[in-house]
Each structure stands twice: as structure tokens, then as C-alpha cells.
Length: 503
Length: 88
Ligand SMILES: [Zn+2]
Image 1 (cartoon, chains in turn brown, red):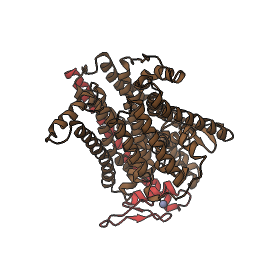
Image 2 (spheres, protein in one colour):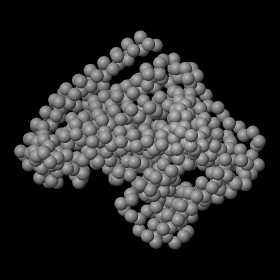
Image 3 (cartoon, rainbow over the protein chains, first blue to last red):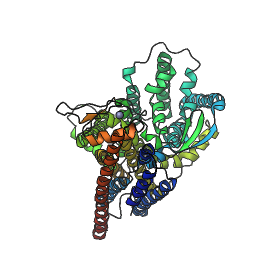
Image 4 (cartoon, each protein chain N blue to C red):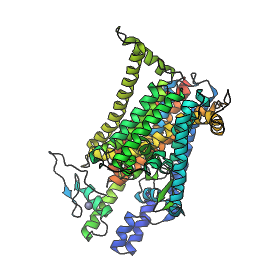
């Protein structure tokens, strides 16, 4: 049984201590408990209980899946989904046992200082951005002139294996390197900039639009199969980015409007390695997700939800159920006008937009419910802002679940394309990931959600003075998170397929 | 903590406002807890005693809540144990 952190004996001991000391320190002791040993005992109890619990469920799910082909589960699908949802609910119940503010603050402020890097920053940035510019130029050039086989194309492999899969993983598992590598920022730093001031009221909305547009292009156009098409898209992206950054200045553009930079900044908030005051600092993963300055606008919430929805959507349309849904909707919409491809693209778009709206509305409504149920005077908007960073852990878990397989299977091909970009082998080597990768994906989704549950718990304690209110305020968000988990686990359990009607 | 993101519903009358930062609270115990947590250096003896007793009440309620959470966990665990025994 997880021992209650503020048990009788502890508070008794503290009460005795107070009689000896003056009133100021008496109060101080109530607010900040001082025994490191207590913290350690609580930490070990908490971590071991949580690990035991999640490993049992995740391993149980993973094993049953890995022994079977993807479409025949050993247990009924509803039970598998219910177990996943219950894992999230149970961990939220477990988190409610941790009621010691000092302990929570201790975990979230723990850090290990690393080397000072500011002396090295300028040369590193020059080298990194130089490398970025070379890779960008090669990608555009080789997409047109190089081999047109997807698994042999430098352009496709760099875009999807490195930028889409590998770099985000590096960002949330390690630290955010994008500001160092960003080729467009490198190009813009050589140009005169800042002809207009960036309109503050736009906030991060351009980045939200940009991210959704990029994903839509990825779905509708053959960017992952025809290198020359991808080259044109990269060129278009470059023109928009450079023009925007020249117009409003690089800081405003890459901080607000550039979808890639905003994406890496948000994923970097989950990461353990941070740059603080010119030093590299190691923190516990996700401990910065309680920061109040991470999400400061509705557009930030929209961006975080877009990250979750994008991965859910692209997962769904590549399953047999997703393909069947699209086909059914396409035949339903057959009213005699328009080619089936055009209607299919409309259906893909409609599904993409409406699903996003549902995901966003569900989260926003959780904020409204949280305010109503606790009777707090803090606005629903501010509650939604504060809890939104915890969703980044969920997005990171989804990303890892969806892209590990792709990164592993195409990494030999990427190596070949880098070594000889113009004359790659006719039959590039692709690895097929072993069956237990499926089980691992389920574990990634669950671990992401567990981190999010913890982050939400810690955030609630920062936001509300009463700990009972803090616990009650989380309930609507936990229900939304259970919903996201069940949907994601459901998609992972479906057999794969190629999305229909697309070029 | 900054309290700019707060509104008081029209029908509601707050139980009190923080003397130090002006933040309104719907109940007295939340106000007392807030003062003790956010402004521990500025409290007088009465406010301090109020904080300590509010803290003790909160502790009691938390204990009840933990018991309920434990009950829910046990129910969940045995519920799933039975489901697995029946289905799988
Ligand atoms: Zn105050």
C-alpha cells in the first residue's frame, strides 16, 4: 500500500518540533518540511509502486499483443482498451496519495548543473546551421536530380527519418537542438531583417495553421513517395519562412509563426536537458511541464492539441478501419458529381478538421468543468493554460509509439543515402522491426500518459491553495486523458493499411 | 503566483480577499490557506493560528479522500481480476 506522505506519525513529530521553536519557524516548518529522509522514503515508495503497476499492465498488454499477429488479440479488444484506460485512472488515484507540497516542489526543482556552454555557443551555432543549410540545399537539389525511389532518396529519408522522426525524439528524450540546426535561421541571419513588427495578437496562431497545413499536405500530396514533389514543398516552405523572418525579424518569426521551431520548443519542454543561464542543466523528465510561462495564449493550447491530434489522425488513416471509413464516406457522398479522388480529398480534410475540433473542444470543456466543479475564481481559460503543458508528455509518447518503427527500419537506407546520395543501391536495405515493437509502442503511449497525469497533479498543487480543490480540479482532465489513451491504444491495435484514393 | 486570471461570478459574493495580493476566494479556508502558503512572512499571530487549524482540517479531509481513493483502487483491481478470469 502506498503510505500516505503526511501520516499521523509524521505530523505528530512535526507538531512536537513546533513547540520548541518560535512561531515563525513553526509556520515555516508547516509549509516546507525539512527532512530529506522523508522525501527520499516518499520518493522511493511512490516510484516503486508506480513502476510495478505500470509495468504489470504495460507488459501484460504488450505480451499478449506481441505473440499474436496485429489483428488477433489474445484478449477481447474492449478489455484491452478498458485495461489501458484503467491504468491511467489508477495512476491518477495513486497520484492523489502524494499530498506533500514540499515533496512535489522538490521533485520539480531538482536539477543537476552541467558544463557552461555559452563560450562555445557561437561556434557551435555556426557549425550547426552551416550543416543545416548544406543538408537543406542537398535535399532540394537531390529531390529533383537524384533517384526517385523513396527508400533511396536522400530528400525523403532526411525529411521523414531525420526531421519527422529522429529530431523530435532527440528533442523530448534529450534536449532541443533545433535552434542550433535550423537552416532557415542560418540563412536569415545573413540578411537584413525587421521591416514590420510582429502583431502580438496573432500569438502562435500562424504556427498552428502552419502545422495543420503541413500535416494536410503530407496526407493529400505524395510527398513521402515522390522526391521531386517533396523538393517543391521544401522549397515553398523555405520561401515562406525566409520571407516571413526577413519581414518581422527572426526572433518574432521563429518564436511565433514557424511551425517547426514552435514544435521543437514545445517538445523540448519535456526533455531532461535544458540550457539555463548559459549552463547545460539536467532535470527530471517533464519537471518543467508545471511552468506557467510555457502556455500563455489560446493558440499555444491549440498547438499542443494539434500535436496530439495530428499523430492520432495519421495513425488512424493508415489502419484498415480508417481506410474502410474513408471508403464508406466516399461512396456515401457519391452524388454523381466530381471525381472520386476529389471527394476523397474533401473527406480526408473534413475528417482532419472535425476531429481536431472535437479534441480541442474536449480539452477546453475540461477546463470549464474544472472551474465549475471546484467553485474556484480562477478562470477556465487560465486553468486550461496551466494544464496544457502536461499534454506535451502525451504527444511525446504518441510520437515515439508511431515513429520508432519507421526510424529503425529506414535507418540503414538513410545511411546509404548519406554516403552515396547520387548513386544509391538499386535495392536499399530496410529492416522489419520485430514483433515486440508493437508492445513497446503501447508502453510508450502509457508512459507518456503517466507523465502527463503526474505533471497535471503537480500543476494543480501550484495553482490551488487548498489541496482538496487541487485534487478535484484534475478529474475532468483525467477523463479527457483517459479518452485520448483509449483512442490511441485502439489505433495501435488495428491492422495496418494504405490510405485509399491518394496518389 | 499571479492572480490576473480570476473572475468572480456575478451571483457570487467572495468570502474574502487576500490582504496582501487582492486575490478573491470563495471560501474562508481557501483564503486562509492561500495566505499561509503565499505570504508566510507577513502573517500576524491570529492569521498564523487560523492557517494551522485550516491546515489540520485539510489534513483530516485528505485522509478521508485517500481512504476513498484506496477503496476505488481495490475495487478497480478486483474488478479487472474478475473480468480477466471470466473473459480470458
Ligand atoms: Zn495573497
